[in-house]
Length: 598
Image (cartoon, rainbow, N blue to C red):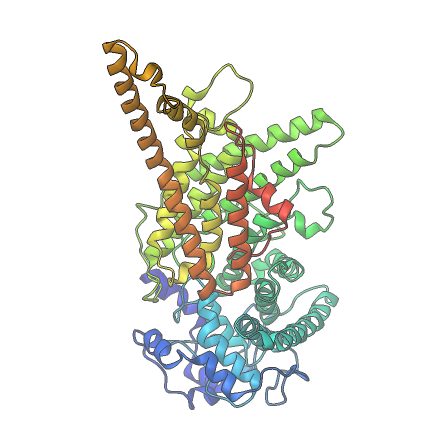
């Protein structure tokens, strides 16, 4: 608990500052005591979507945003409203505004569409955009501090709300697209100002936050759009700020660290569906070659990240370390499959590249195996009764299992090293799924089952469900009911008409031997059916959980996830016995089933 209290100090400030910036809202709203806020909020706003529809006509395209009632500071990059509180040194100021927020902040009721959408974001969207939601949720805290002074943030929050509502109200899609375009215009204008300056005197907090907002929510309108242009700009800005971070105060570095972790999560989502690393030769932007944006211009020995963070992050949860390891794992798996599918003209070079990837995968495997979350103490709490810290710990363990599942599917050599009894003289490598990959996938599915669908961790579950589904393969030969079926049919074959055959015309010992053989075949069928039943039941659970998530989260990316999972299983089930040659990444690429699955 102490780490939470300490970390929240970066938003503490004198009451006069708080009143100066947010007085007009605080006077109009009765603050909610935390502990009753979430439950009361759900009760009071259960018909929020319907209320929004009845009060406003949403089928008109929004024009002329931002509205005149909202005013912006003369410099959109300067977040300081009171010049007396500004540190007048030449240091880079990351976040001069500091606040103390003891309750969930929801703007008061307003009568125009744009502000109503901002209110809707604070009330409903913020919680589904975060692994947990409480006054300590940094996504909520930053939006509170920035929305009334940053046009980029305000228009981005409106865009997110309208994009989410458009999935429930199809006639609102044009309004959503218009608002998304308006937010993009605002962001582009601010980007031009920032890029024209050789140095950053004030970090554009609102701009970075807006880029994350649009980059992660554009898929709510079009599931196949990954938001990469927005997220690349966010990465470039953060890289630029991190290079100058020695000029920041300790409190400002804490805020920068929050943004860095936000990028870590986005990078993990992109690593599933996009090639964003040094193995791909067609990437030319310098910033895309940067693996760790948190390094400054004078890098020294980087401190070792803790396995479990002191303070939970609304996206990376309790472990930034496992998020980075899963990102690196997904990257190397995608690149290995790319090289398999697109061999170069020089076989020797391809072979060397493959060996390098196998070695890197082995290092990642050892790091993942070395993590221990199941016994990790939950020293801090989220403040969200729906999402206790144990949920976030379970997500971290699920990420660890997910990384191992992807490594063992892509690099079967590493499975055989762990299971030396499977080494044979054959040059063809057969992955013993039933001994390694399937059990890991069943364990992952059990962890997902322990996470309630309405937990804040639901935002992480689509990717986890996809990963679990990739290991639910019916094993063969010798284990598949298909390969066993002819044997059973032969032993139990009915004699032809008017001919009892050898079944009845044999010696006493042979006759009893048939009974013993039939019983053994039945036992084999029962054992295999039980093993397969686990896979069948787990497939059913994964499908059901994705159905529920489709009703709780922005549905368009979930629809893509459901289609991808079914496509993977269809390809698995069509394989010839003993092959196991289908890889889920190939299925995703060949069917163009990509989205941000989180």
